[in-house]
Image (tube, rainbow over all chains, first blue to last red; front, side):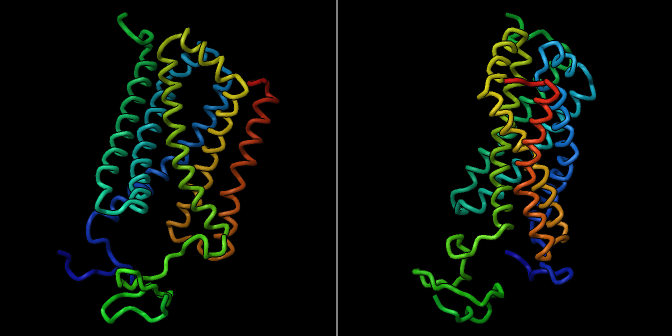
Length: 131
Length: 153
């Protein structure tokens, strides 16, 4: 299946997509460092805030945009991190279903986050709409 | 357990310690946590996995909060009553602890992933910061929140 392993600086080069996934996970984590600090400052701003203040916060495009980006990048990072955790503890023969479920959970989480954030940013009528 | 290296052709892991499994396979001895002396870097590493798990739960909770905001003022008021209760504040405190842990332990992980800070002294120091820092910072964060009058019991 695999050709003779290649080495770079005495380190084996990944034969398939392992290194790409590792890099993507690290890039997502790197992006989450400033975003996490921003979430922290947001938590400080919104602690104890009333409904009007929260709606006004979501009304800012910058706030809503950063929150949506944070949600999507976190879900990307978490799905990759959970894949690594599952690979460590679940035998190869029975892990593909679990990885699929974990990816699906974070896909739904990201999509739902963007859905609610966009509605709040656009000032849509409270859900359930049209009732 | 045997200390004989594996057959020619197999690559060793440089520990020189091998175990013959019941099925006859010779494999490097696993670093089982109950035979290895506990070390701060192990604690930090394990806590980062715990943090990722807790952050995943926290993300679901935060999504629920955003969904409630999108459901209008009445829904928000009923949830605000709960989230301002002592148990609600306890959960929010836990979430800030997880966030600080994610930031500090994630930064430690990124630095180590870049191949930096892997000598004993730096690795120990960063592990200590990643384990104890979040507790200290989360408590400070909430002391300031209470002092600023943003939240009250």
